[in-house]
Image 1 (cartoon, rainbow, N blue to C red):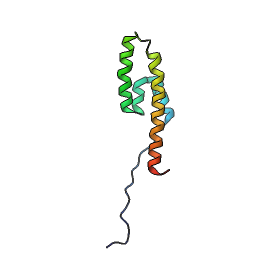
Image 2 (cartoon, rainbow, N blue to C red):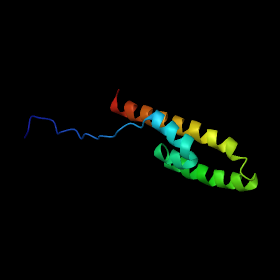
Image 3 (cartoon, one colour):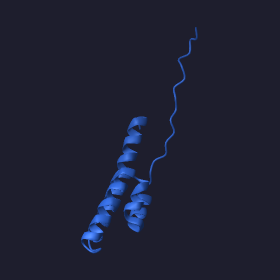
Image 4 (tube, rainbow, N blue to C red):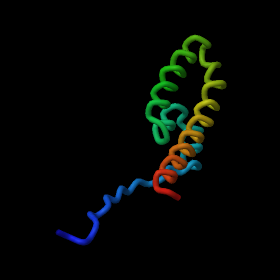
Length: 88
């Protein structure tokens, strides 16, 4: 019998940069959201395409800023969850 405890597994995951998320969503809209949230990016791609056709493109003035805010919040919340799991 060993007197040492079993080794603890180490999981390495990098944080997501909120600034990069903001830049990607500012320039690429819902496609840029895929960096911070895949499900949110897919949802906003569908919503943006629908709104684009319904409003002849003018609705993107509303959906684009929503993408930027959602992407930044998703990256921030991801980092918060990741660091809380690590005990930091």
